[in-house]
Amino acid sequence: MELSWESSVTDSINAIYLLFSAYLVFVMQLGFAMLCAGSVRAKNAMNIMLTNVVDAVVGSLSYYLFGFAFAFGEGPNENPFIGTSYFALKDIPTSSYDYSFFLYQWAFAIAVAGITSGSIAERTQFSAYLIFSFFLSGFVYPIAAHWVWSSSGWLSPSSGSLLFGSGAIDFAGSGVVHLVGGVAGLWGSLVEGPRVGRFDAFGNPVAMRGHNATLVVLGTFLLWFGWFGFNPGSFNKILVPYPNTTNQGNWTAIGRTAVTTTLAGSTSGIVTLFSRRLLVGHWDGLDVCNGLLGGFVAITSGCSVVEPWAAIVCGFFAAWVLIGLNILALKLKLDDPLEAAQLHGGCGAWGLIFTGLFAKEEFVVQAYDAGQIGVQRSYGLLMGGGWGLIGAQVVELLVILVWVSLTMGPLFYLLHWLRLLRISPDEEVAGLDISSHGGYAYTAPPEETGPQFYAEYMRMQINHSRQIQIIFLTLNCLQICNPSLSFSVLCIL
Image (tube, rainbow, N blue to C red; front, top):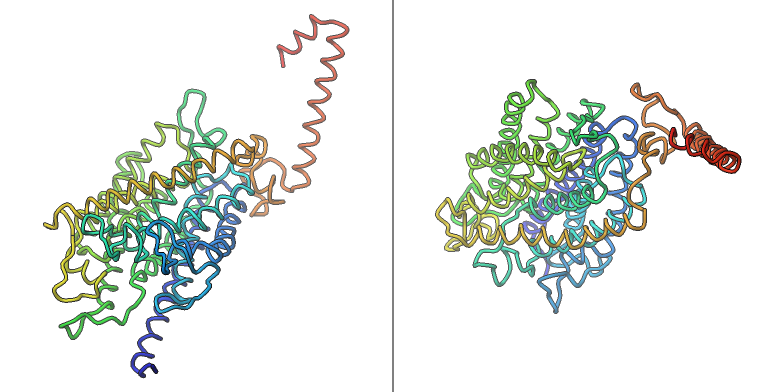
């Protein structure tokens, strides 16, 4: 049947909106790159930027081949756990999904790997990045996405059989994206251990601040800009009018979602600013940037279903969640250079709980039923909606913790056992840029007094090996001629 002119225009505008949202989310990859580069030491800037590029290119292939299928594959044998069709985009487009939708979801998938890479920055072999990025974006994340975002997923609020009569509301991915990436990063940092020199001999933390605050601020604003595609874009369609109204539709809900996103992030940022002033005695711009991002992460779950005033509550508590987890991480000697596990994992978990407490029924119906009249939905506990939604939110939180731990934990342990995960102490002290990538990101990092070029680094390594060989040969000779003298020299060394 031929589409009407009005239907064609509507479909075209919706496709343009979704594509534009996908482009905004992809800009977040640049934001991650700048934020990560500024948050590490100069001798590792090239490495961390390259890992962000790898997240995009490796994630593209893995998500194309099977990631999208695992996340949204539907068919005669629908599976609530994992998708079973659309491998390598076979049979796309369909009545449900087209190429625009794939591109939008791909931008989400590569963001997950970017979160994890920040937790294990400055001490990880580049080959390990290739392996875990492919596995995370192509298998671990898509299955979590299928549970919540596919219409056949067992946690989905669009499923035929709703968990607790509600389903879990994770509109743009506080759990599916951020908690998955944060938990994966937590396992990576636990298995690798802290960076050389991060804690002294008495276990006290030693500050290792990033080398460029300008890049951190630039990355933060790029992420803020991209979040307007991340959260409002998750409506997928903008031209969806609500019944019995003349001026309301998805376009009004999209505007409200952008407002709640801004308010949550801003509140978290300002709370972090004054809180850190009281804790450390000065105005810390870098901490404010992370606090701002923590608010965005937390509101991502309920951005479309809460009032603006509730978004302020979300941001207020997100700041304290981040501050508290950072203090706990230092006590547990957890070294996460970008606070990714605390920020994305902790604030993502809070975002799921927040949605279960503050979701408004009218907005839930708008987001998941296009505002249909007479539809009843479970909504926030503190808004009078009962225990169904909060129960589903807690279940999502727990199953993501278990799922990512059972998949990414063993992967990191396997890489560690195969000696593919962490670089040697010598390489770490020299810096990944010079030891793995042929030179620094900058001409001459001012804080570095070591080799400036890869050839110089290799000559130093060779000379170091020769010196060790000479020492052992000397000791062997002394052992033959004068054993007591040999023992004395060995003790001195």
